[in-house]
Length: 163
Image (cartoon, rainbow, N blue to C red; front, top):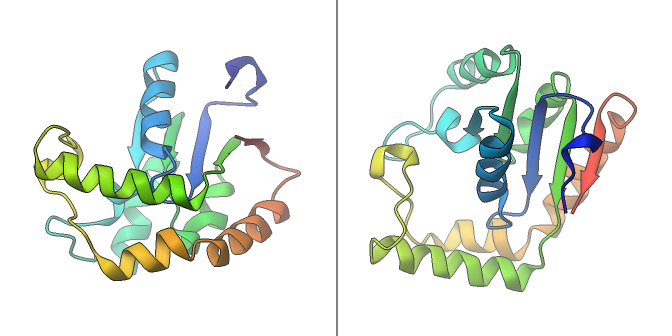
């Protein structure tokens, strides 16, 4: 259970395996604290899942990071060190791969049936993607070690919460 009194500040990163509950937890924290939630997919992707150039993404991200308070949910290993320079706390969600697989397919089905509508991305969503599935869900352990290395380098500046 997350206790807000344990937090060092009001700039919170939430990271973890895809489908680990980053956005859901971010929404709950945002409602509880009144701090705005930003999903990295919203900051990164352009409509239709088009990639922006690196400079545009970094500038969009920097605008959010320079706000007085925020909750940012998402991974994007290539910007983790940059984001950690600004954050006070990082929440790491540890989720088993089989739970993530279940949640991934549930998300696809719920979105296809329109029973779950992600208000992010202006109503568009990502359908099943086999490359994403294997790279991000099944073989996440490769990224997990890289995340831990990056996080451990900044552990003296940032309060780390593992769930």
